[in-house]
Image (cartoon, rainbow, N blue to C red; front, side, top):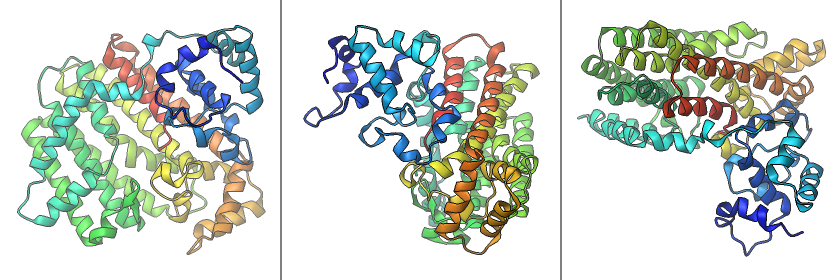
Length: 436
């Protein structure tokens, strides 16, 4: 089936990136057109319906042929694409077809931003921050530099520094201390990763061998301690007492979150509130601190500081909830670790908690045996995933994550509609859209 020239023109830039010598189905080209046509359409694609299919990978029928990650979550059935193609052949525009098919209202492209555009805004600041890593990891002890550089350069998203850098710009900060303090936030995060991997006996981190696998548990723990120490050294050097207080309180809560998670390890009766307490303290408080530190640097006042901290808190909770979902639905390659890894490590996360609350006694017994046993088998993992799917644990968790993101975005309403605010809104959307 040939595409109309007007359709080809719409995404000719993308077609230039394809190997046109290979045959591609109409569905592949249409998926790219749909993805680009109406900003915000991806939110509709992530509605729980896409997870109701028994075979999730087959449900995304075109996934194997799509080169662009942003198309990964498109969830239309093949018949829906064919229906759209017929309308296009009859002369309808892509936008009109999509508005009719999805019920979405058109949005102006200027009101949205892709995550790559966000990186472009702060790429110089990120580069300066990463140059500071090499300086601040310079130690007479060779292993400190080696392990620190290994984990810091292993492909992290720089999510927490991004929030601090964008928030400081949003508040009109004109100084330079936001760059080293963004590095402080990343140092703290990296230190917790080194410690986490030891506690969890993890073998992979971001798709590569974890530091404890390469250098041993002792080295990972001690280099993590070094990063914590260096983080507070830099805070004293570039911050003030309020910044120091915020980060001190934050790391204390993070440690409490780690201990609480350890207490709830392999506990099949963990409640939603108990789990959210872990998520809040272990993950979200550092992102909230990144926003608050930016407000302090810019002397923006308590109201804006609170708004940025609340934005970061909602972002952090949603981020972890989406991680919970991805652990069950992503491929190993996407996630950088094994699918179902949380369950194998004895971590009871929101999809399982939700399913367990609705399950029968027999099903809860299956969950309990899998979670509290010494070594979960693939058959047990499959049984637990089936129970999660039966009670829509993934869909429920995504809805909870989306609610936190909606709340986080509302916190930005008090700020002027600048590029930086648009970027922070895009970061919030990315939390829901991401596949890794």
